[in-house]
Amino acid sequence: MSNQNHPVIELRVAVTTNDYERLVKFYCDGLGIEPAAIWDNGQGQALILNMGSATLEIFDETQAQTIDQIEAGKRISGQIRFALQVPDLKAAMERLLAHGATLVHPPIVTPWGDTNVRLQDPDGMQITLFQVSDK
Image (tube, rainbow, N blue to C red; front, top):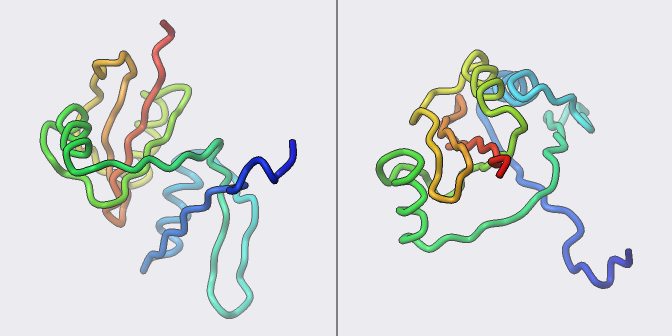
């Protein structure tokens, strides 16, 4: 497929942390992902994790309120929140909790039938894990 038809080829989200090792362990071990690339050249450290297909959702404040109300019972997320589709929500949730996630709200079934859980990473980033229903 020609890239001329796709003005954006890849979405990368760059997260900066004051505790690099902690966040690397959280996302690599917590999600069971091996880094696709690692940089440690004496000028800082970085890695890339392939997180599947990427999309960018842009919400107005009313939509953010609606989703937060469904997933967490109140307006709670910041300007950016990760939403990760996983094949087994319970297993992914337990693994992230074991690696330092905080449970923001227990799993719920959304009005559209998916099962979602709201977590927070060790740096405070809100994360929605969702499992699509088998309907």
